[in-house]
Amino acid sequence: MAETLTITDNRTGRQYEVPIQDGTIKATDLRQIKVAPDEFGLMTYDPAFMNTANCKSRITYIDGDKGVLLYRGYPIEQLAEQSDFLETASLILSGELPLQKQHDDWTRQVTLHTMLHTNIAKLMEGFRHDAHPMGMFISTVGALSTFYPDAKEIFSPESRRLQTIRLIAKLPSIAAYAFRHSIGRPFNQPDNDLTYAGNFLSMLFRMTELKYQPNPVLERAMEVLFILHADHEQNCSTTTMRTIGSSHADPYSALAGAAAALYGPLHGGANEAVLRMLHEIGSINHIPAFIKRVKAGEGRLMGFGHRVYKSYDPRAKIIKKMADLVFDATGKNPLLEMALELERIALEDEYFVSRKLYPNVDFYSGLIYQAMGFPVDMFPVLFAIPRTAGWIAQWEEMLNDPDQKIARPRQIYLGSGPRNYVPREKRK
Ligand SMILES: CC(C)(COP(=O)(O)OP(=O)(O)OC[C@H]1O[C@@H](n2cnc3c(N)ncnc32)[C@H](O)[C@@H]1OP(=O)(O)O)[C@@H](O)C(=O)NCCC(=O)NCCS
Image 1: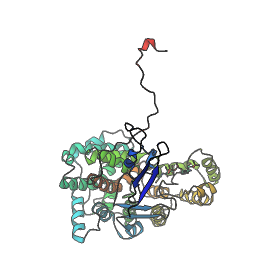
Image 2: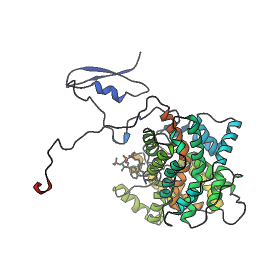
Image 3: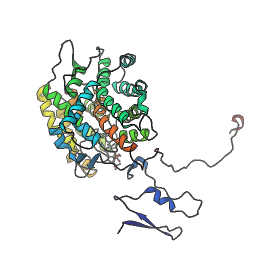
Image 4: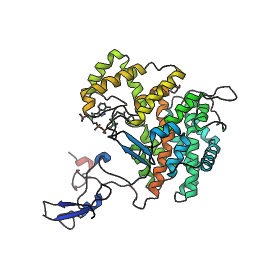
């Protein structure tokens, strides 16, 4: 028997049967509930989408209470251990792990598209010397739509495939250019002999040597960090990608918007905020006073808490383990001791325990990035590169979903009723 929800409207005494499917009711099914026939009908009020599914998706699954994260059904722990970023991106985009031939073809295509048009380099040179790399990144990704006007063909699978390859290939190059610009060094061209992560490190850090040899530990760490950040279902930036994409904008414009959403300190800017917080705290002795201020509502413990995870973020566990390997290669980040102590105190404190606030992916990632030589301004950019795979997969899923239309929420209007315009000289 089909599951339904019976609703009795006390205003009219009428009863309604609303179908339940996949544990949800359709918000539009509530519109039939009204007192007078000319009324609009019942709506739901859900600021920040706290209890509203905006789409059906087959990409990423999260069980926030159990700390489970799956891409297309595969546990994040197995992918972080055994896969590399390009394979994971291919999985997220296509739904299946690629066969060897598919993987080789995909890798070759991405490798062939890493170069940037020289005018993109000129455009990036125009930024102020102290421009935030994420600001440069967002603007340049948006500008890509002017270089590839064929991207408007969003209903052509071939065009979507080409833009996908371009985005996955070129975003690390744009990120590296933004970094090089901010430190006043010439842009490095891509090296097609290297892996995805190895080439990125080369574009970032190569100096005068003819051939850059990435440190294998750091190269692998970069791959793992990319895998961990590749998708995370309907977060703020992904919702932005879907929302902009729902107006049938091209993927570069939509992705620039998604990256802008990622920039905020409550989302992709959180690891930057963690390091700034650790610097502000200054020493282990100051931690108890800092925790006291957080509990009094005078600020947040950055890198803690999550809208979905109400237990330890599985990505944070993987990063925490990986930190030791990275620090063996780079030397220890002096802020690590403070982070460990903060975590220890917070996990024992009733305030954090009762609110189920645990370290999230950003709590330790910043320490690793810093040890690898990245300035904090680069952190959100490092997040945006791999998330591109998730954004594009979610955008395509949205375009191919017959249930989707242009995103357009409702509002509850609480403002003034109709009133007449008063000329300025007569206003009181
Ligand atoms: C991620 C985040 C935005 C989720 O927010 P949310 O789901 O809207 O949760 P709320 O803001 O409703 O918080 C619930 C309660 O926990 C508290 N809380 C949440 N995160 C907190 C944090 N990092 N430090 C201190 N208190 C926190 C809130 O003050 C609130 O307490 P209250 O019920 O007494 O008012 C939030 O936890 C946060 O700001 N974390 C720090 C930023 C961060 O690390 N972001 C990266 C996410 S990957």
